[in-house]
Length: 133
Image (cartoon, rainbow, N blue to C red; front, side):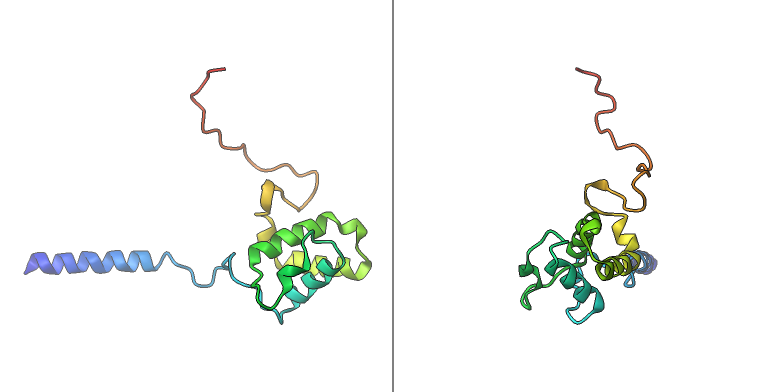
């Protein structure tokens, strides 16, 4: 009987430990952006102007634009900032401030804070012990 009680207690502790690792408030990068949100509308305007590097097919009602796709489109738009009008640049700035944390994880390891800033740390070298040439 003691052994069964100990096993049940252990299982309960393990279940509580794994359940506390989940954070339901953390932004999911694969969540769809709501089509009636201001972020979606700003990105649609930037795409219509040809600043995001994607076609309009991503904005069809049957396609769910994800947060990762939006971030990549915003990265391209920020690179094309010099071609944007003043109102489009304001839209970019609002999107960039709202998704600043996402932009730190932009593709190709780029950071968009400053152009002179170098990435922190060294890339991982999985062949550290391999000295063959």
